[in-house]
Image 1 (cartoon, one colour):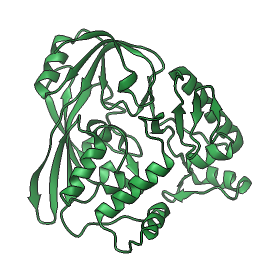
Image 2 (tube, rainbow, N blue to C red; image 1 turned 180 degrees about the horizontal axis):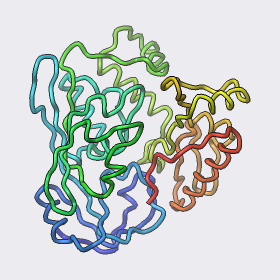
Image 3 (cartoon, rainbow, N blue to C red; image 1 turned 120 degrees about the vertical axis):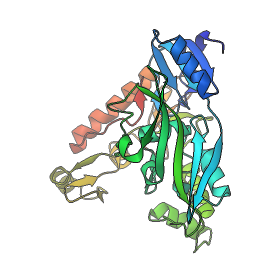
Image 4 (cartoon, helix red, strand yellow; image 1 turned 180 degrees about the vertical axis):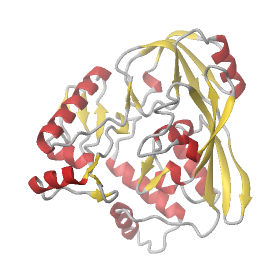
Length: 337
């Protein structure tokens, strides 16, 4: 393993931000990861996965360890379920397609989400009525300090909306090396509760969809709404959908009766951040090379040479304006580096 100096990260972050790592190394096995961590324990470290959920606002003054562990397999079958294991460096969408090819259901609604398998539990990624926690069994993670492997159960990961213990109490303490999912082998629970999916299936004349049909529908929807990071730098949804107390929602809704919303519980309501941003006039707006996507206001984009700082300033302007207009705070889903 060769450690490179002043390494360019432009191709290692989906925003396509030009930034440099003080040092950079790529690991392909668990043993290599342990070796790098052990030999560089006195250095400042930065763990890099698919680079899809971060905004680089500066160079990284650390040893960047790119986790590129690969392999995926069905490890057990029992009744109508199977457990599937994927290493952290596997591309998420390619892994979803692999499970569908194996006729394993549960991940189809999460098709085409950018990033790698290892980062999905950290963020508890979700889309179209499905979250990682719905099929997650466990993950193996390496203690950065001791290089020991620990298995975390679903309960131990403390999943919440776009949250987990790896974003909180154990942030920067572990490196996820593999994840196991429990998927259905038959009697798949098809989730088409979102109108976009229903409409896409109807447009294709599909009345009894398979998991592959749902995956294809989600992929088509995402292609129509979201830019390909290879063509236009972005990290998908930049903001979380705010979940607010019902009394705060009722106050905002009284002033803005067309505000869409989803009941979370007896006391909480979720409001689409994209609607708040669009109603605040940002959809399709461009500020130099930093902008808001023309088709989806949740997505901030780099039109070519935007700096991370410019995109960050745009995000802060959006947050400030939404708060002024609606009295609702929206938080970044993307990690600001």
